[in-house]
Length: 117
Image 1 (tube, rainbow, N blue to C red):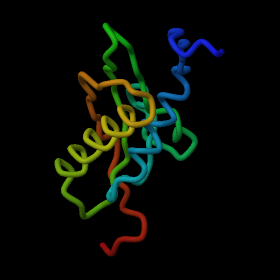
Image 2: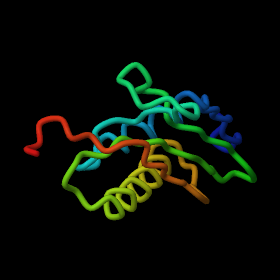
Image 3: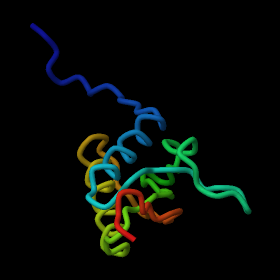
C-alpha cells in the first residue's frame, strides 16, 4: 500500500526564471516598448541594452524589485507603470507562488519611433 501521508518535496525556482517571468509580464502590458537596464551617467539608451532591466531580491519570502522600462510615446506613463506593477505581481504569484512586496518602476526612455512629430 503506497504512503499517501508523506510530506511534499521542495521546489526551487531560479532567480533567472523569476526575472524572465517579470520581464515577460511587463512586455505584455500595452504601452511598454522594451525592458532595458539603466544606462550609466552620461550614456543614452540603446537597443543593445534591452533585455536585462530587471533586478529582484527575495526577503522573508517576498520579492522586492526594480524594473527599467522604455515606454511608447503617447501613453499615460503613470497608468502603464501601475499596470506593469500589477501584472508582474500577478504573474509571479500565479507562476511561482511568490508575493511581491515592492516593485519600483524606472522609466528610462520614451520611444518616439513610428510616431508623427
